[in-house]
Image (cartoon, rainbow, N blue to C red):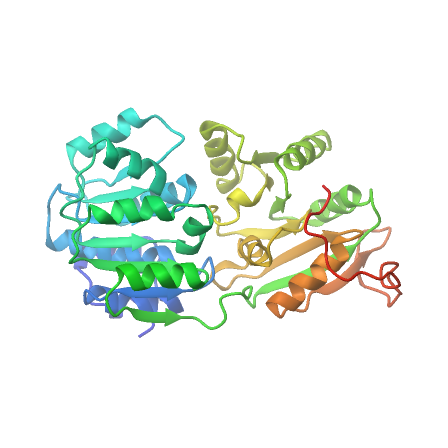
Length: 398
């Protein structure tokens, strides 16, 4: 099975998929959708950008097509409001006119419209755990009839401390329900969640989940302190497509975005201290092509969905190796070619080597000449190589 037309879907959904130019199933869709359509629990581990959203939205839409109602029959939990809004938009693209809209229950925006939508009734609730737990405690949402629960980016939700909220939410759901769980990793905490809340799930694992897509070219530039910004400018001037630039801190992101704006680049900014309207404007502007560059902290590394990001730049390395995968996973999506560049200086050279060892990667080292052309890196002794370092520092300056 390799095409959506081979799935036993309603004519209305097939028409919507065709109109959206969804033709070929991705591996996670091919393996996860059939058992999900049969009502089985599914645990899927796969990298970002592999089509997980459709893997759970298609079974949801098929169920809602069979059981038209305004009662909440499906619940999707996600770690960030950006992800929740993206799932909402995809549902809007695929639902039939007769099917009611979904209800969004997310933080960072006014709750009045969300409460009104819930009172009007919706068969699908798309939520972040914190806001939904609050609505449950205030008796603003009725989930007693939920038949299908989706936990998307489960590992991320647990990393963000949402386990108590998830457990509280599950207590108000029917025990007899279908559960679909998708995660980039199946670490111990996620495995525990699976054991607690899923019944004999079908396991779908797509190889190593800690690998970037093969279509992504990984490269790194070792530079002297103070040279990062000049090198970034060279990379951006040479790049015709859109570029995502990651920093480690909010202050660093703010400072870098201002520098790039002074240089005349069309640049947007997203980090945790931005208001929701600012974040929405930055994301939509980048998605629509009004900005060439988006400077972001890791808050956006899993929550951003743009199909044509040509280049991801790690201006600062992430704290965790896993976040390296989520960052570079923003390019090379759906088989398209992409490039991911890491700019490292000083102790970051050693941190990059640790990332390579942890993930089993080989990242090509490059240098920039005066004309800005990529050249293979000359074999030279690194100044750090002669030093005695027993362990990598736990924190890095920014």
